[in-house]
View 1 (tube, rainbow, N blue to C red):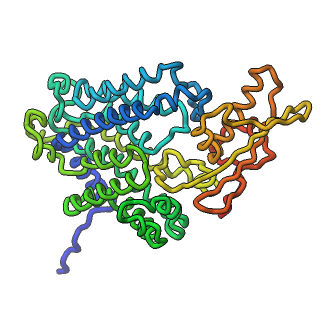
View 2: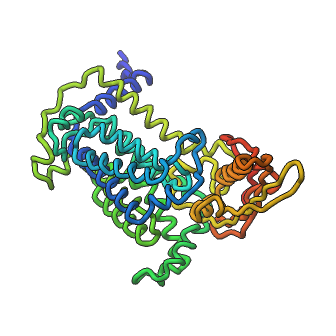
View 3: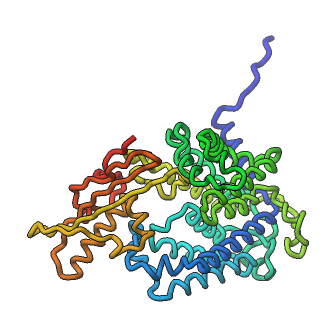
Length: 460
C-alpha cells in the first residue's frame, strides 16, 4: 500500500497562522524601561533645543524680525503670535517638554509639547528641517502611546496616564519604526546619480572643511567624498536593521555615534545628530536602563500578562495604519514629473537628508496689467536675508512670494499686478540654469499637488 503523501497547509491557512503568531508577539508585554528612557530623552532634547534657540536669538530672528511668512498649503491661517508672543510659546513648550521628561502627566505634557512645537514650525516653511518633523511625530506618538513609568518622578500621575511597567511589544516596535524610517528613506534618497556617481553635494561641503583638525587635507581628496557618499548610503540603508538585531546592535550603535559626531562637526546641522544618537537607544533591549539606573527611577518589574485582551487589537490596527501612512508619504515625489531635487515637489516630509546644495538668485518683476508699467521688486523689502536665501531656490516659495507682492499691491490700492520671476539656480555644483518660466504670472498660479508646469526642466 502506497504511503500517504505528507499533508501541507493551504497557503491561506499558512498565512493566517503566520499572522496569528505575529499578532501574539505584537500583543505580548515587554519591559517599558527603554520607552521610559526614550520619553525622558525626548523631553530633555526639546528643552535643550528651546534653550539653544532662545540663546542664539533664533526666536527673534524667525518670528519677531520677519514681516511676511511662508505658509504651508492648507495652513494659511497659522501665523506667529504678534510682538513677543512667540517667546511665551517657547517658554510653555519648554515647560511641557520638561514635564514630559520627568513623567508628570506624560501624555498630556506630550500633547501640549507636540501642539506647541508643531505650531511654531508650521508658521513658516522657510524653517523646515527634517528633524523638526521627526520631533513633532515622536511627540505625537508620546501623547497617545503608553510609555511606561520608568524615569517618572511622579509615580501617581505616571500610573494614571502611562499604565504599568510593561507595554505591548507593538508600542516599542512603532517607536523603533518611526526612527528607523528616517535612516532607511535617507538611504533610499541617496540611490541616485548625484550622490553615488558624482559624490555631490559632499564634494562641495568637504572642500569647505579643509581646516578640519588632522583630517582636513584628506577631506580635500576627491576620493574621500566618493568613499563617504557610498558609506553614507550603506549606513543609512542598513543601520536600522543592524540596530534591530541583537548580534550587531552594539557595533551598529557605535557607528551611529561616530557617524553623527563627525557630521555634527563637519556640517553644523543643528540638533539632528544629537537627537539620533540619544533616541536610537530605544533599539537596545527593553530593560537596558535597569542596568545603569537605580530601581526607584526605573520602577518595578511586573509579571507579564498571560494573554492580551481582545480589546487591545484595535490600537494595534491603528499602529499599522500609522506605519502604512508613513511608508507611503515619502514616496509621493515619484508621482510628480521631473527631478525632485530640482522641482522639490514632494521633497519635504520624505526624509531626503543632505542631498541638496543649491545657490540661487531671484529677480521678481511686478507689471501693471492696464498700463504695462513694470517695476523690479526688492525681495529684502519683504523678507529677511534667510527667507530670501530659501525662497530663491524653492519653486513653491517663489510662487508664494509672487502672491505676497501682488497682495501687497492690492492692499495699497493698486491694481493687482502680474508678477514674473527670473530665477537662476546652481544645483549640486552644476552650471547655473533658469528654474522657472520667466513669462508666467506666478501670482495667478494656484498651489498644485501634481507637479508645477512652470518649473523648467532640470539641467542634468
